[in-house]
Image (cartoon, rainbow, N blue to C red; front, top):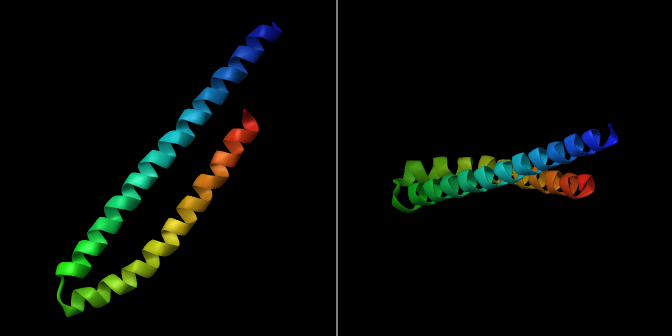
Length: 82
Protein backbone atom coordinates (compact mmCIF):
# COMPACT_ATOMS: atom_id res chain seq x y z
CA UNK A 1 0.00 0.00 0.00
CA UNK A 2 2.84 2.41 0.76
CA UNK A 3 4.41 1.65 -2.62
CA UNK A 4 1.24 2.85 -4.37
CA UNK A 5 1.31 6.11 -2.46
CA UNK A 6 4.96 6.72 -3.36
CA UNK A 7 4.27 6.09 -7.03
CA UNK A 8 1.36 8.53 -6.94
CA UNK A 9 3.53 11.16 -5.26
CA UNK A 10 6.26 10.63 -7.83
CA UNK A 11 3.87 10.96 -10.77
CA UNK A 12 2.33 14.08 -9.23
CA UNK A 13 5.80 15.57 -8.78
CA UNK A 14 6.66 14.86 -12.41
CA UNK A 15 3.37 16.42 -13.54
CA UNK A 16 4.03 19.57 -11.52
CA UNK A 17 7.60 19.75 -12.88
CA UNK A 18 6.30 19.46 -16.45
CA UNK A 19 3.73 22.21 -15.85
CA UNK A 20 6.41 24.52 -14.44
CA UNK A 21 8.68 23.89 -17.44
CA UNK A 22 5.77 24.53 -19.82
CA UNK A 23 4.93 27.77 -17.98
CA UNK A 24 8.53 28.95 -18.29
CA UNK A 25 8.91 28.09 -21.98
CA UNK A 26 5.60 29.65 -23.02
CA UNK A 27 6.22 32.74 -20.89
CA UNK A 28 9.69 33.34 -22.28
CA UNK A 29 8.40 32.86 -25.83
CA UNK A 30 5.61 35.39 -25.29
CA UNK A 31 8.02 37.85 -23.67
CA UNK A 32 10.41 37.64 -26.62
CA UNK A 33 7.63 38.11 -29.18
CA UNK A 34 6.27 41.12 -27.27
CA UNK A 35 9.73 42.66 -27.07
CA UNK A 36 10.25 42.20 -30.81
CA UNK A 37 6.89 43.84 -31.56
CA UNK A 38 7.66 46.81 -29.31
CA UNK A 39 11.11 47.19 -30.87
CA UNK A 40 9.66 47.10 -34.40
CA UNK A 41 7.06 49.73 -33.52
CA UNK A 42 9.75 51.91 -31.98
CA UNK A 43 12.13 51.57 -34.92
CA UNK A 44 9.64 51.97 -37.76
CA UNK A 45 6.90 53.97 -36.07
CA UNK A 46 6.03 57.62 -36.31
CA UNK A 47 6.68 60.10 -33.53
CA UNK A 48 3.28 59.40 -31.95
CA UNK A 49 3.85 55.65 -32.05
CA UNK A 50 7.26 56.06 -30.44
CA UNK A 51 5.65 57.97 -27.58
CA UNK A 52 3.10 55.19 -27.14
CA UNK A 53 5.83 52.55 -27.23
CA UNK A 54 7.67 54.33 -24.43
CA UNK A 55 4.55 54.04 -22.27
CA UNK A 56 4.15 50.37 -23.19
CA UNK A 57 7.79 49.65 -22.34
CA UNK A 58 7.11 50.55 -18.70
CA UNK A 59 4.24 48.06 -18.60
CA UNK A 60 6.36 45.44 -20.41
CA UNK A 61 9.28 45.77 -18.01
CA UNK A 62 6.97 45.52 -15.02
CA UNK A 63 5.23 42.45 -16.44
CA UNK A 64 8.51 40.83 -17.39
CA UNK A 65 9.88 41.41 -13.88
CA UNK A 66 6.79 39.82 -12.34
CA UNK A 67 6.93 36.89 -14.75
CA UNK A 68 10.61 36.13 -14.31
CA UNK A 69 10.33 36.47 -10.53
CA UNK A 70 7.38 34.09 -10.39
CA UNK A 71 9.18 31.74 -12.78
CA UNK A 72 12.22 31.70 -10.52
CA UNK A 73 10.06 31.09 -7.45
CA UNK A 74 8.35 28.19 -9.21
CA UNK A 75 11.78 26.79 -10.09
CA UNK A 76 12.82 27.00 -6.46
CA UNK A 77 9.58 25.30 -5.46
CA UNK A 78 10.26 22.56 -8.00
CA UNK A 79 13.76 22.03 -6.60
CA UNK A 80 12.34 21.93 -3.08
CA UNK A 81 9.72 19.34 -4.05
CA UNK A 82 12.30 17.07 -5.66
